[in-house]
Image (cartoon, rainbow, N blue to C red):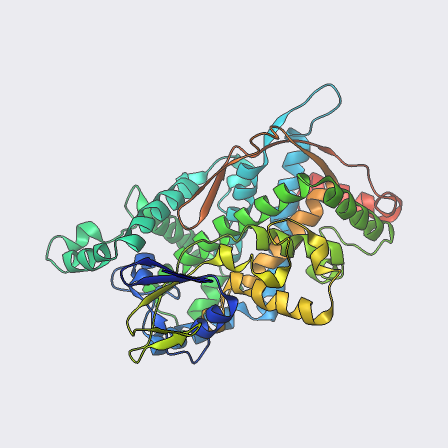
Length: 456
């Protein structure tokens, strides 16, 4: 059965790409509830996290506690930490990976961007970066473990009975301790818990007041076991999804010369006016219209999640697009299809940042409403959106401010696999130093070079 933007994909399963239906289903007071799909995102069989909690009252209470850590004040306090990690990353790129005339050095920028986002999220969550950037490796196999765990979760999100079976087995004496993730595990979620607990141990030795996520969670009275469950979610979501968004936006810009040229021109003009800090501040980035258009369009064309996140139709049923849908039906949300909605025009399949600049206010408002669904809606809206957007703004701007970038293999620029969350490999480029901007030379450049040299 197919009804426009609503399609049947199983005996009791529908999927929709309609932004209006999505907003209705996810609305704060909606009677649609989280389905058993969400059990596949449960890190601890006995402790639901902000994503997996299906009980609406418990979810709202947990969200209330956690949301206090994501206020604009707290996010602003984290900006210097993000800056520090970005400066260190660029310093290492300049020292080790620059191509020069007659000497091309292939640089896997995708891998190094993943290292950067992991170090950023561990720094803001636990006051200490994992160290992937400096050591130029996947420290403790964190990223490999995240990919392994998501591949497993993908199967549990499709064969829903596996979640019930696993929960049942953990109740059996002797089996529970074997099946439940432990910090001593050498793989899976347990390994991530072990990394978190090691960083927590270092954190506990510090006497200085901290404003990281761990401190903020504990201050709000979140129990330690719940804190660990939330930190696993934050570290996974804050590293791979952000990295995917940066990589996909970067790739789209590089592959469209007219976009690349126009963005470079905006960055050049902004720097020459002498009003841009190093790294750029979030408040400054928001005032650059073409940068914002590129980031919006990058997210729209490559949403970092493709998970169905199925909801359950309320017991009394509902009428959707003129059709009666029985209660208990599962409805999945097609994030990629939603971002191709007709509100974006007849060329929605095309990467065209100009669409955000050349439309009227009514169309622009409707586009933003649909675009925001990438980060959820209502009580399911992503708490980390502001921090993710800050990272995107800073990284994309500073990449094109400081470097010229060329794809190493335009016929196959990267390998990307999807387990509900995307994982990229072999995103190789040739990266060279960009010509310094006039204002950077006259009064700003000395400060920039000092930061790039010292990494502070």
